[in-house]
Amino acid sequence: MKIATFNINNVVKRLPNLLAWLGEAKPDVVCLQELKATQGGFPVEAIREAGYGAVWNGQKTWNGVAILARGADPVLTRRELPGDLSDTQSRYIEAAISGVLVGCLYLPNGNPQPGPKFDYKLAWFERLIAHAATLAGLPAILAGDYNVVPTEADIYPTKSWARDALVQPESRAAFRRLLDQGWTDALRTIHPSGPVYTFWDYKRVAWPRDAGLRLDHLLISPLLAARLADAGVDREVRGREGASDHAPAWMALRDAASGTKARAGAARAKRGIR
Image (cartoon, rainbow, N blue to C red; front, side, top):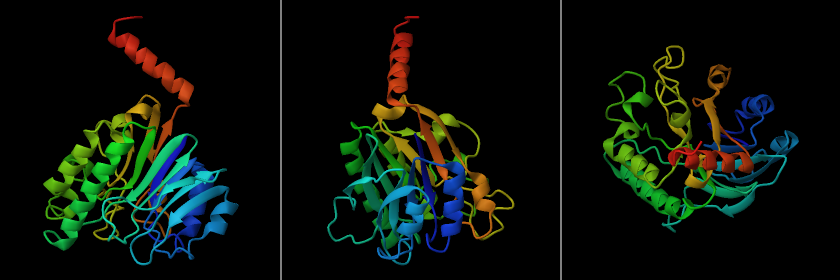
């Protein structure tokens, strides 16, 4: 099972890019962010023709999230992040697919900071942490654009982002608290050292000089951790004409039977059994 997250940065404008990548990579599940399309403006027919069922929450301007499933219709379980009935921003959607609960999220950017937008980012993060705690005991995935650079290893060598909300200690601490619930960071587990960038700004000639950041994360609940087989970033997608400023990040899970064998093997190894 291959699960990907992709901040598409306008799903209508970049539909050709999305469809080309779907045809090449053939992910089983895709979490999209920054649709920048209304509910009625989401290109569902084109996506269905590409072989994917979809659930989505559209919104104009900067927001909007969707979950796609290859050859299946995701079973919608939640359209918003709980904890604030007054929050109307479309930043979270959740669906069941092939026995796995998938949460797709677009965490607030938080700039400029300090200020109301950063306060909203941190409050949204607290709501995510609270909701994630209810999912941690399930076969669940939380994938999306977290708008957080977890460590200095996740950004190119620079001081130019030092005041940005993406790298602030509060943002990083919230991400660590989420991981502390037992979630596995798929990309860093498979690639424990070195840069694994998912975002290159349109400004500052960022893409040609590989001045990237890791903002897009795939977190796996403890029940799925033993099934993690691979993870990566389809970097070349960022270099194409009309590309989003993000590249798709993905992970591959072994089937449930293989995961069970992996857990049993790890347990035997811990007990010194060969």
